[in-house]
Image (cartoon, rainbow, N blue to C red):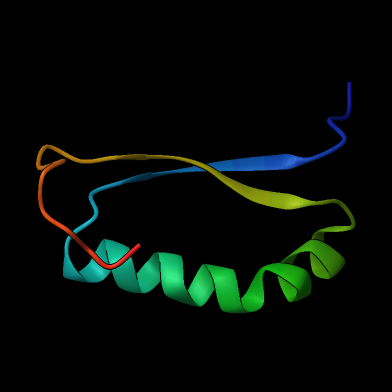
Length: 55
């Protein structure tokens, strides 16, 4: 069974996690082309949901 898209979850949204999201967003089209299907950042989990991270 083959899925029509790839969904990614991220644990942690501090300095590193926010950087990963930024890099992912800049390169999402390239990743999708290399995988042959859409790649989506589906969920982010973090203990601190009150800190503004500019998003």
